[in-house]
Amino acid sequence: MKSVHTAVREQFSQHANYYAQSSAHAEGDTLDIILDFADPQGAERTLDIATGTGFTAFKLAPEVAYVIATDLTPEMVAKAAELGEKKSIKNLAFSVAAAESLPFADASLDLVTCRIAPHHFQDVPAFLSEVRRVLCPDGRFCMVDSVTPEPEKLRAWQNRVEWLRDNSHVYGYPPSAWDAMITAAGLSLEKTAHVRNAQMSFLWWVRPEQNPPEVVQEVRDAFASLSPDEAKEHYTVHPAGDDFYFSWPMYAVSARCV
Ligand SMILES: C[S@@+](CC[C@H](N)C(=O)[O-])C[C@H]1O[C@@H](n2cnc3c(N)ncnc32)[C@H](O)[C@@H]1O
Image (cartoon, rainbow, N blue to C red; front, side, top):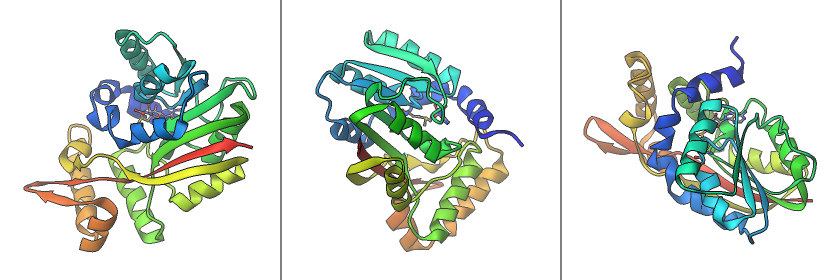
């Protein structure tokens, strides 16, 4: 069986340009909340894990001492470096690295961020243990990721739908599981918030240029199988002709190294 890291690299190496142009990743509440929760004072040695094409790193760089932007996929790191250069951001460094095995010394960083990525990670407890290891005493971890509703039925539904559309999806945890895993890693929860990504067109999100028609139909049927209340309350589904718009629930956390 293909390893999760191989699946991630195969998926994301083809999509560096797509992400670089994605307004859902370039802007929005999830970027603002990372900055707000991080509350940078200007001197933070910062690491952005799974930086993708660098949007979180670019947002943080003017507010901290420097940002090291890392990602498992070399093509994403290359695109982030190209965009950072175009933006003339000087205090950025880049590195290809897995979230579960960070090439940084113990207690060497003040701030670690990670946005819309852990649902692709092979081993979230290993990622959190690495975050804890590289943070200095009192250092801060801020993350936002898509999460699943607490009821088991919807959790299984959402994880299946996300995996059908993108086989590099591993698992979306509910907020209660995040709180427990972060605490178990030796970090102390400071702030949490329930947020959402921007409304997305189903026909854009499902990537019909990549996924075969039967997969697109299976995902569409899965949305149709939700009750009207589930569709509205958890996924903000709004019909729009042949298309519909929806959003994923997201969870934002800041935690301190204790
Ligand atoms: C949706 S993109 C990230 C978006 C980005 N953080 C932002 O704020 O725009 C997900 C990224 O996670 C990376 N990724 C997935 N699994 C990873 C892992 N185990 N370690 C490091 N990066 C990983 C992928 O290569 C991809 O670039």
